[in-house]
Image (cartoon, rainbow, N blue to C red; front, side):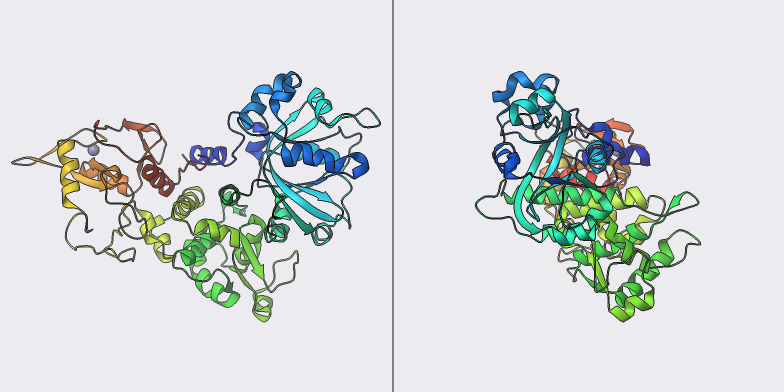
Length: 511
Ligand SMILES: [Zn+2]
């Protein structure tokens, strides 16, 4: 089951690759966003002109129709409406860094354009094609009759001005960038903060819409979450990083500060690692404290960068602190993203431990069920009053509850069965996205299902979910159990089902 779920998550992790048929194979092996450092080229080589033409403005594919060849379909799918933003590289002539970069870059990677000791723009690789005719038509040929035939299709272009030196020297690439260079996801994670802190430059910037920027960060965060590097012991992945991330998300949910000093971290995360880590694994909170940085989701402050894990006493002496990066925190403060992240972490990394228990310990108890209600009588916190003793425990509109039961004549929308009572039938009205904290779902028909008690429990406790095509699937296997029955007058909001799938760890973030 895990493989199915995971494969699906990473499939949807990269926008732009869908259906285009470019770079798909590379995508599946990738372990995180890499950097492709790309010199823009000097004026003598028409670098600024090319950049303005094919990246800043972008080309119209229709102007180049007869050069597109076999890539026509893929490129049109990548750029269905607006301009196509493209950049290319000449074929590498020898086995060097450039050859490695051309071969190793992947769809989803981030390109940093470099000029005059600065990084001047970033972009996302949406597709990779090799097309000599198209390259010649756009950029011409150089003195050796070569052209930029290794083409990157780019999205999410943002221009800025960032001094390149700290990044290049940090990566041991010298003080200026001479050639196309690939930087590992880990290397990128270490220096990403130097790029992201820089605000896009005003008038000249492209794609300034905040939505696009937000989508980009969200995509990055989920890609990183689904590709955490974990140590393995007896072929079982360590749970230290995922547990630490859940703890950090719990702090966000409780609106506590992002960065935490080492001693507090140790006192809070240490016991979690002891209780939920692999049996016999040593309790070493300094490992996730320090090494989560490689995920790109995590900041450590107060410590000089170094290869070895700092000892606890060094962390104490330095008063080091750590926490989610500001981008990750920004994304995970939003409710849908948070639900999806928690579902993802639990199902991908913590599948074999007691989800309810671990979520309770990190202050996220309500995320163990769709209703947000806590099975042992506790509660998720929050202002919504719950009546003790009733089956639904929430103040909600009784007329809605009645109308959904009447609409379906008490037949379960999953299995169709009706529970008979002496005088009538019995069914339950289930909220798809629970009312009150932490899910904050609306009390509306579009957020309600009529279910039998068994399927109500299975739906609420995330054993089953409903996919985009209304198939009722078993979370443990992905198998289709039933097709959801829907009354013609019952409009069910897909967004609520999506939220529920997020809790189940089977989100579809690409949409
Ligand atoms: Zn049923």
